[in-house]
Length: 514
Image (cartoon, rainbow, N blue to C red):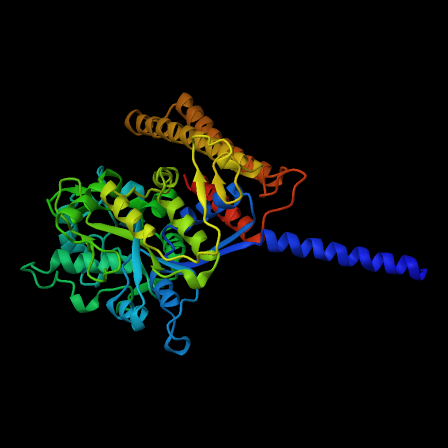
């Protein structure tokens, strides 16, 4: 190459690099990272997905679903690093323990708890449906305590049969007790509820010891089964008959697991789907169980076994753990505030029933607004705004505005997939009902050729719907934009693709388990 051409090429490369560097300086990638509770992880991932799609500048947001206890540990840090957070925020379904709160607030630092949703922890079982009472299984706190402590070991124990006289299980069928390993807010919710609800019971064998409560407890390892995460719990219940376990109600119902009706403080047996979760939080507010200031310790806050006709006895309130002084986070500080504000916005709060969580009462939302307004941010970092359902001409086009008017084709495709799967599930329920009706007629009146044909047709229809759902899923994932890439546009980051894949996979598993 001639010297002049070589010089020109070098200059072009230098100029291009300078332009790229300028573009990156003008609009860098804004990052946000957190870790904690597994229960609302899909909800977090969806909100992060939406924010990345609605932003005008590039965002990179991640959340590690590792459990509430680990989320607290990583937020607090260690003595070796001066108790500095390893992530921008933590999240948990339990408040920070007093010990961790004390560590996180050393040297005058302030930490805030920001509640963002309410979620019931439910007890599920895998007794075959043909052996169940019409109303399902009902258990009070005393029986649950005896079952999880292995004081009661079989499903036909006289105490269980007394509350469920039409339960028809084989004699001496062992109850397979399954529990979470490592730190889990679900374990904390179950055990602290059992301790609260049984502490005054005159039958001392019912009492769950206060010393054996928290995110990690002592189990009879020789007679129980340990699993990792709510996914492991759900998988065990799905794969093993006659088991009993606990996990967030939304996760269990999304996989069509069978819930046990619990007895609340007013003596009523109900399932989480029949309870008023938000009303339970309102009772906690009237009983002053929640601190008036968000910088105070929340270590003693719980919503277990509260009064009320429709109250749910194991209600968890999920929190963000955030440092009040965010100036050291630079541009990630305002982005964290925007993320929390988005989670608390009407748009995101109205998505909670989709995940079988409940919205916060207005009084808690007002408390949160005051908490967020008091956060200390880097004055040189850009602040974010949100354009909701109402169009804001000019303002909505600003650089640091998250606009609901911006969408990706992948989001549109996901919404369509969800509607299609829901319609198929509804058709399956109708066909299942018809199949049960035909079977009952056969049992009562004897089989006929018409009945046999009807049963065969219904079974074929069920299989057709199932494979139709699978086909819809495969078509979505192979279509342009279906994997998270819009047609003729760059693909989303691998983390986003993995999130979308697992969400769709869970939906497919839900359809397949019907």
